[in-house]
Image (cartoon, rainbow, N blue to C red; front, side, top):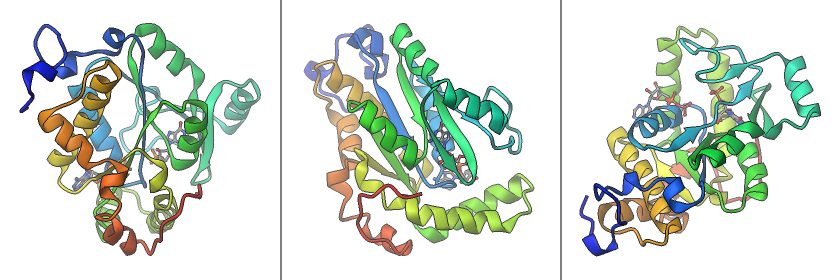
Length: 257
Ligand code: ADP
Ligand code: 5GP
């Protein structure tokens, strides 16, 4: 990292990653959304391994586990009846119907992260993100875009064959949904084009670190700042138009799913 020492936070090892939410006195909420297959889970997994004090909300869903997924690790898998009971009991911070299944974030995750002085990362769809942006206006939102519709289709196909999924209708439905979800990109603070994985991981880390620095009263600098700023919505508007065009999209701010 090419940081300038006087702008770095005071901590024991000089690494801005070590500046935790508790040191800042408050927890940040990061919302990350992407069309299915863009690589969001891959990026989030990398982030969780490389950045400390970041809790990950494990959503509840009525969809069955996929591939090697395990109950309580990727999701809490519950029945529709149980999900509807939780809705009635107001146990969700947000929830949405995605691909015909319910997905929701339990309020408890935010409460627990705050008690621990940790930041919280939420991997949710555009409908859930819109609900949370209203409830938590200070949240930081990141939208992951694939480099093109064709590349998204390739990634979806590769993942399906790796998981031995035979239903090719699913891929078509996910591509159609992607075109609608992508219309919502301009409701997010940062847009991360997931082209080369290593670059995307660095960019995602930089977004988290620079927001941590900013909220603690330090201005980010060097490579962290450069990588994060490059993803800011206002800095990518023009460059992503060619990607949006591959999905046949024009600019829009409506929430559609
Ligand atoms: P999502 O969580 O957005 O649905 P995944 O993380 O499951 O997507 O990624 C979809 C597929 O694309 C996986 O097979 C993953 O290994 C692959 N993938 C993720 N990021 C990249 C990338 N930058 N380049 C190529 N393949 C990628
Ligand atoms: P998948 O079934 O591929 O894991 O996820 C499908 C979609 O549901 C993804 O866009 C994912 O971000 C979204 N999702 C996962 N958990 C939640 C949640 O708790 N709330 C909302 N609104 N969406 C979620």
